[in-house]
Image (cartoon, rainbow, N blue to C red; front, side, top):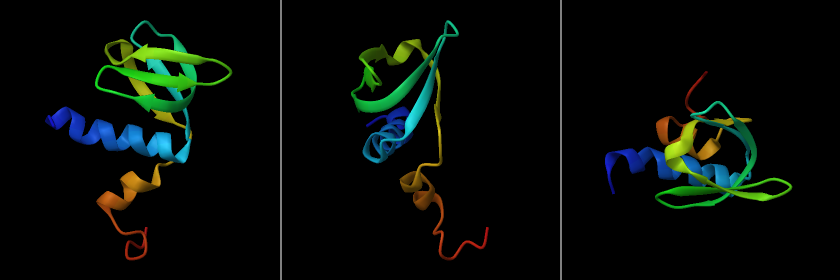
Length: 83
C-alpha cells in the first residue's frame, strides 16, 4: 500500500461504515453531496437520491458533516485526552 493510500483508505472506510454525509468538491468547483457507498483505488460511489460514480482524480476536497471517530481514535485516546 502506498503512503497516499495509508490515510485515504481508513478515512473513506470510516465515512462509509459510519454513513457520514459528505460534501465532495470537484476540481471544476461542482459540489456533490451524499454518503460514501463504496470506493476503490480510482473511484468513489456516492449515494444520495441517486448513485454517482466519481473519479478520484476529479476530486479536490471531501468534507464530512461531522467528525469521524475511528480516525480520531488512531491519533489519541478520548478517555485520557482532556481536550
